[in-house]
Image 1: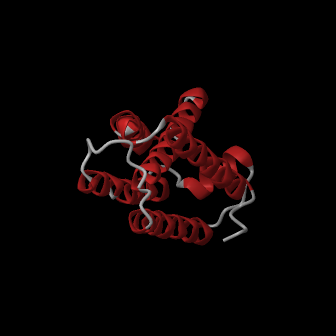
Image 2: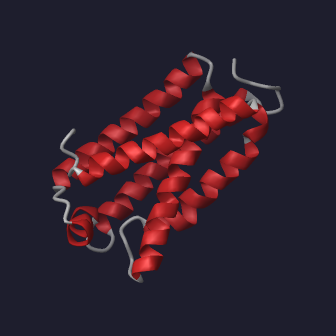
Image 3: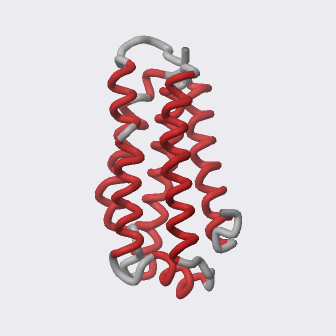
Length: 163
């Protein structure tokens, strides 16, 4: 078990874990329906051809992987590491959307949920659940979350051809 101590009941970790796929669905909806939509935006800004179908397939895969990760983490006793991975992933993604929108001076799909939901959620979870893990396991979770962002970036820049 990855608990350094038992200050946080596992039910709280489970409940907070499921906030990530829920907010992910809200974030996807914003990216798809608000503004020009993410596929059109990424084509205009970066020249990446990402069809709406590929975008939705990639997001569906992301949702399934997130839910599977939560269930596997619970089954194999690493829910505290998993919640740190997810918090880091959404925090970095949220910061990326927000900083890009601010630096370009225009709305980018996903910026609202990033600024209003993912950044606060990511910070809250990283601070709140820090005590549940040793420093090493916490940093491993953060590193994996950063790695997830790099992987998503590379897939997106290829036009999600791996999906």
